[in-house]
Length: 99
Image (cartoon, rainbow, N blue to C red; front, side, top):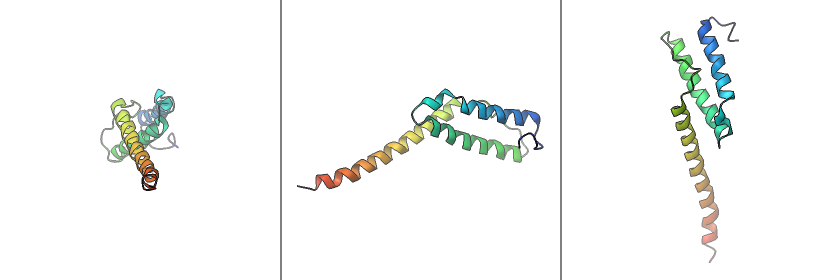
């Protein structure tokens, strides 16, 4: 689909390299790494596509922004921690009231 589009060759190649970088990232082996990479990819690709549609200059999507990826990972970990705490408190509260 990419090659059939009317994109500049450099944009098509950058998008292909982006997906290769995502799939081969060492981050995939980290805890929640796949989820972080998928979330990162969705947001970055959407932003990149919006910039292309706007007709302006676009960033090189093939270059993974490690700081942004780390930020996405921390946000996911934080949400999972909150959810785990919520689940534990639902289990623990009934146990505390058995006396």
